Amino acid sequence: MKIATWNINGIKARHDVLIEWLKQADPDIACLQEIKSVDENFPREVIEDLGYNLETHGQKGFNGVALLSKLPFDEVNRGLPMLDDKAEPDEQARFIEGVFSIDGSALRVVSLYLPNGNPVDTEKFPYKLSWMERLEAWTRTRLEFEEALVLAGDYNVIPMPEDCYDAKAWEGDALYRPESRTAFRRLCNLGLTEAVRSVTDDPRTYTFWDYQAGAWPKNHGIRIDHLLLSPEAAKLLQQADIDKHVRDWEKPSDHVPVWINLAA
Image (cartoon, rainbow, N blue to C red; front, side, top):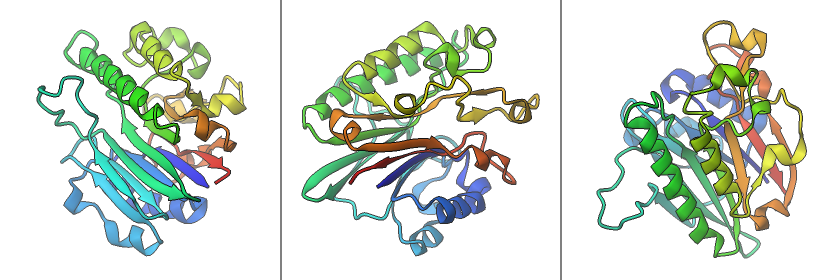
């Protein structure tokens, strides 16, 4: 089973690129981020014609996540719960969970778009850290189910110095701040496997290249798109890779797809 994640940076701008990638890569489940579309305006028909069931959690002009699946959905949950049940719900559309049945067992797949957090001297950085705290709490409860769980998405976190072309250039940025990296490690330390790093230690393994300053041709990239696997999913892992070539297509996203194969 092939499960992929991709921040497409706008479904309207990247519709044709997405369709071509779906045809070529043929994932069983695709997790999209930054669709930048309300649910009713998402172009369902062409995607459904390719054999996908589709669930979205959209927001006008910003954020937004989606799950495309060749398997039927058993359950869909939108929005990352607040730590305090009495707190106002988070209005930003950054989280959607799908539950599927495979050979009598449950597979849970999340498409998430973690906040960027910049500028760090504004409310955006505390929001990022609180969102990560909520994600950690949610994940802890899901791991109690002892089911295959895949947390896929744009984490906006550079985990280690080797995950960017120049660590010094990113010092002070919310993606590389110690607080962000520590929160990411806490999440992984719940017992999750970071799929790409489990199959390669190549330091020039990136998933994002900025549109500015010739980042793509210079390979000045960073790795911020990750798939984290529960122990039950990790034992099924056969392959993990990055579709780097998609960054060279016409009108590309600044991110590229990252995918895994599970023996399921």
